[in-house]
Image 1 (cartoon, one colour):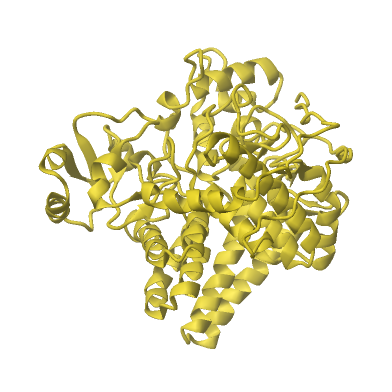
Image 2 (tube, helix red, strand yellow; image 1 turned 135 degrees about the vertical axis):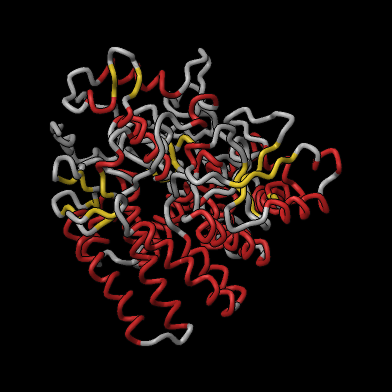
Amino acid sequence: MPEASRPPRRRRAPVLSNLPPAIWPALQLHINQLWPLLTRDLKHAVEAARDPKTECEGACVPIYVSAAESPEAIAAQLERVLEPSDFARVSILPLPGAPEHIREHGLVYVPGRYVVPGGRFNELYGWDSYFIALGLLREGRTGLAQSLADQCLYEVEHYGAVLNCNRTYCLTRSHPPFLSRLVLAVVAQSGDLDGLRRALPAVERYHAYWQTPPHFTAATGLSRYHALGEGPAPEAVQGERDADGRNHYERVCDRLRREFADAPWLDQVYDATAHTLTAGGYRHDRTVRESGFDLTDRFGPCGLLARDFIPVCLNTLLWCLETDIAAIRRRLGASPESIAHWESLAGERAVRMHEFFWDGEDGLFFDWNLATGERSRYAYATTFMPLWAGWATTEQAAELVRRLPDFLAPGGLLTSLETTGCQWDAPFTWAPMVLMAAEGLAGYGYLAEAADLGSRFLHLAAREFERTGQLFEKYDAVGLSADVEGKIRYGYPTNETGFGWTNAVVGELLAMLAPDGGGPPAPPPPKPRPKARKVPRRPSAKR
């Protein structure tokens, strides 16, 4: 397997501290004004049904409802809130028994208000909703944050899981499970114990979703991402074309043929005769979308071996689910036995995660590769999630801090140490990963490191806001820019504005680092990045 290039070293980086003092209140005002523009409810049904990813702009607007709902009752609701011309376009349809029987994709019904990320993402997303809710709660928009959590709980109750997004093509996949953290964040501000009691069955049902095969793997006692469904993901066929008109799969197949011709696993994911992915390749592709990290080479080239990995991130979040359920049950006065059960599950998971993920020699947490029976060796920003969750030891935290400079760039936290042309690899930085790493570092007492990391990202976001008037989905942390043109070769090559979780994380970091509203401290002058310890690429293995 050829080595991927590392991000270029920069001896001099642009200075980020020369920002006018007024930029910080202007940035907060911009975020405050964005939330209403990103909010959807039944009154926005026609607008919400618009899907730039599948070019869904037809005269008819299909909205699918679960078998537990009455299409007639929902149609009556919509008729009361929509203009007659808009209502005439809406078609309320019952979901078929199997999602693969859907021929015309559309919106999946949720009853209340929610917030979309922005840009091409005009729907309710799973892990985005947690971070968005933090931003809403920070501004005192408790009712909207509560409604956002309620829609995620509704999805579990009616569709079996928090969906990747509320489109019919996402009925076969979930998203990183932040649900319990979302519920608890809302209750911490609302104090609604009755709501917490109503939420508990759905939270526990969602835990069962991840603890049931094929997500659960008996060989490790841990879980993996494992989306269902066959064939290409619809949103990638039409909505991820490059300047030459090639869709995502055409570009990926070109890469496989060019870079991985001798890989022993190639015929599992790529049909060289037809120059297409195999059925298994498409299943892996759907799975990397369930992971939320679409796309990265962390799970094989462009994620095309995703089902073979037991990820640090997913199991950390399941540990959070288990500890949170124990805490919820304790708060609701449940029996000591039921509380102990969930604490025991979390304890058992922690033991397994230490065994499978921690590499003492490299001082990092790595995903586990089921195909090779080894750790993957792909250094990734999720290595800091055990700090954010709190299950890492103090000794592991010290080792992670020692490795932190490898991930630091002038503009934030690199997602990986390798540049692959995927947006979830270097040189890009993403707001949620910065926040979790900063909160994790602070939680273990590394306050200076947390402030340094957070300040780097804030100053980059603020400088680009001053230049463009926008906050973005992601940033080039090395080039110090929101301009990603020509840097992303796989997946969708754009940078979306809006942007839900960036808005929220900027607010959270400002509250953490600049509680007086005067702006965070300037990051230190850039130093040459230390050379990362050479780690071997994971060995290829025949299956």
